[in-house]
Length: 203
Image (cartoon, rainbow, N blue to C red):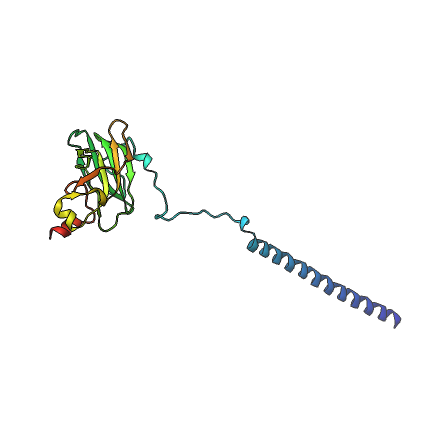
């Protein structure tokens, strides 16, 4: 009888011990899993993401087109128009649209020498060129951004007060640089009209 009681007591102790170990083991596994999960949530440095800028903010490296032939145009670019410098037809100025942005390409012969990215045009602005004059003297290498209204259209002269920005293509250096507006006027019949303002006024 006493021997049977000892055996029963031993079995009970083994059962209780096994349950305690099982509960402790499960608790440790759950705690480890929770810690790992928490670490992944609160530590942004644990993952590296590649930031890809949108097209509207992504800058284009136009330098890769310098000293390359103007035509054929790179993919994604739209040719708007252009003109030869009358006094020196070896040079030309062309307007090209790329990703919604207007750019002026200054070329010597077939080779691009420099590219100027233009500010965004307002609805009433044109890009006069070819017949701009500084202090009454025509400089065919100057182009600008200017306001054009009905009165200016009828006079065919864009006065200095209407001109917002101006640049000059330097045939010696092969560079386009912003230039002074002082004494600058432009013809209303030369250059570019991407907003079709002249067409609207002529109707």
